[in-house]
Length: 565
Image 1 (cartoon, helix red, strand yellow):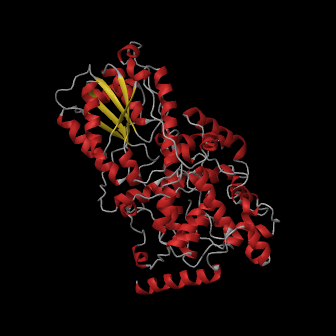
Image 2 (image 1 turned 120 degrees about the horizontal axis):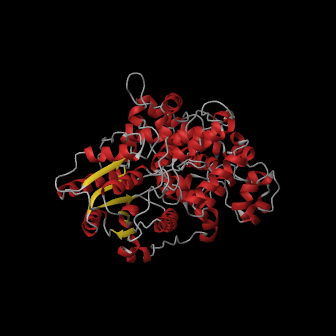
Image 3 (image 1 turned 180 degrees about the vertical axis):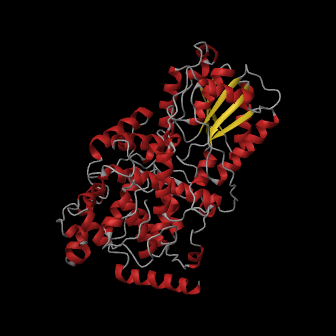
């Protein structure tokens, strides 16, 4: 869900961004996400140094030969690339480094992917997202097969088994060097540290590569060296770094092919199939058509967006039907395409400009900037991924425990058509338009006064593009508990949002079939426009709350908390 610019129903030109990647964005939707299991885990702040600029293979060879490798490693063993949420060949720093290592000092490059269902469950990963991962893994395997790189897929029954799984693969394939892309979350950092320690004990070299952001958050700082907590100054500094330091947007090449004999040596892995995942209760056929898998598909989609759809993006991105966003967030979240690739292609379409030029392209690049911003928040203020509010004083808000209200929100039966349409879209296809993410989130937190954590988790459990950083940032923006948040006294009016962004009711008719026969005026507020008998015939619920009264209740509760501070 996007997030944060100050704005009200009367000041919508300052709408928060669509969180691409979630995701940034995403394109479109704010990905609201949560990790309930992380609340008791302390986050480390170790950030790997930026990679060197890759001028040529000779430089890479020199770097490898001069590095301090653990005693006992040799130049004739194999290299391992551990894929996670970076399911692509192009512009994958860890994969590029692994390929260069294999090219100048090893026999073969081996690829690894670990299925860790317990870990996914604890992190509330949505079944529809896992299915998307698996479909993209099939596509990735096909690309790797063509260059004789075997993809080894292993399963860790328990998350604690991951260390042993990696170690067993290292031994099986006689690996001397392991490469992976650094992750930012608490659990993943703890896991990776455990794997690294285990491998170093058996004298295997580990290389963690930064690839989760374009600019290291530790390098985007205020003049006093502090992290940014407001988007605009962050983005201004980020843009300056990107425009003045070209290496930030330097893309890496796809890996070189293994020697052809690798096909015979690792034949059983080339013949192996990828496990499938079937999200129950969802419109799977529609989902597959909406989000076809593969790196090539991601680039086709981005190219098409930048050629045609980006025109009038500043306005169309708020309209749910027809979809006016890029819908790149699922691909960004799975790492099928990188944020860096998106910025590079958008800049090329804007005559190599980022902060000037075409207003619509600039607007879309800024959405990618929001994705970077939320990663900056995650790294700089780790409490947000441990179930804490960014504004700690807001943790004293007394939320409602009305389970019926929460259930009606989840099911899209609140009696507010625009809210219900958004929730039903989410429940049906694992995706919701960004504007609706903001509307539904604000409604839960401010109209129903229900803890935003519950909504954050519900979104994460269902979004195909669920992204912890963007999802958390979007939810905290909506609840006025986050960084650069919407002022607490600005509460979205669902009726005004509906009339402004779905004026003909097309989006509501698509997802709330009970209201299909109503006029464009009636469809936004049937309970108050129709007489009692006409409304009863619809089979549609009455509004769960009175918006005006609910707004006052939330504002008064927030004032109470501020007075305590």
